[in-house]
Amino acid sequence: MSDPMKIRASVVGDVTEVKVLMSHEMETGQRKDAQGQTVPAWFIQNVVVSHNGKTVLAAQWGTAVSKNPFLSFKFKGGAKGDKVSISWTDNRGDKRTDEAVIA
Amino acid sequence: MINRRRRKVLKSGGSAALLGVFAAAGWVGPAEAQSQWNKTAFDSHGLPETMKALGAGDPTPSKDVVFFQTPEIAENGAVVPIGITSNLPKTESIAILIEKNPNILAAVFDLPAGTEATVSTRVKMAQSSNIHALVKADGRYYVATKEVKVTLGGCGG
Image 1 (tube, chains in turn brown, cyan):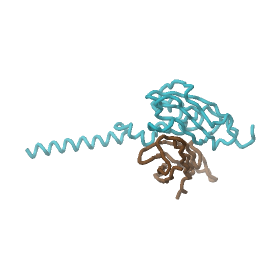
Image 2: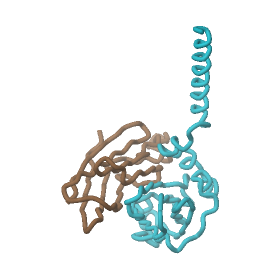
Image 3: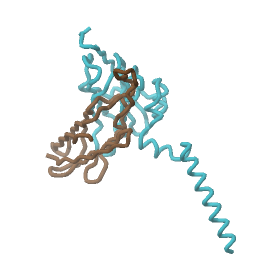
Image 4: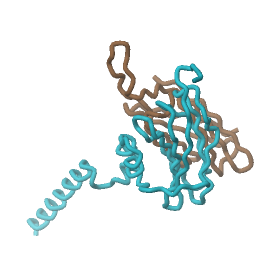
């Protein structure tokens, strides 16, 4: 099972900045293990961030995104106390959703 | 009368099945499939091929696409911070392409209206390479390029 994401969302003026740290191996499928077997690719493919039910960011990722991915971006319209919800789906079909309150 | 209706049902049923076959072959609804995960673009190897798979063709170089937090020299190729801002009006998406990686496309960010045209993340780099920031703004494609050198193994060379 994957660990929860670390999410920080803070609003300055009318702009909310979201910073996320996810917990995922992000295996490229290029690496070989000690036995010389290729380690199969295992990585987050889709990330969706929503605020009040509206999508504020939709990302598609390849294997080049680093292990334990970091993401930051800004959107307009958030207010203190609102919830930001972040979901990812990986290439094995695993999913995780976490929420944070805008500070 | 009944017979005619039966004909109709059979006909429409048949075409629905055919549509399913088309969808499975990837002929119908490519836009929908792309909004999920653009496999063609992520699996392609050459830079022109990747650009084409993203629908970009030959993007216009632009000074309004700016890198930030991106190092000239990265000591660890496994964790290279990349930040991209677009000052172009109506920026719809930002993509990160790493020219010398086995698969060039690293990430695509779709930015709905209201989201600022700035993203930052961390990527893996196999070796020193040009990084291209591909921006789609108002239906057109723009690009900015920055070279990042990777010193592997921490020998500082």
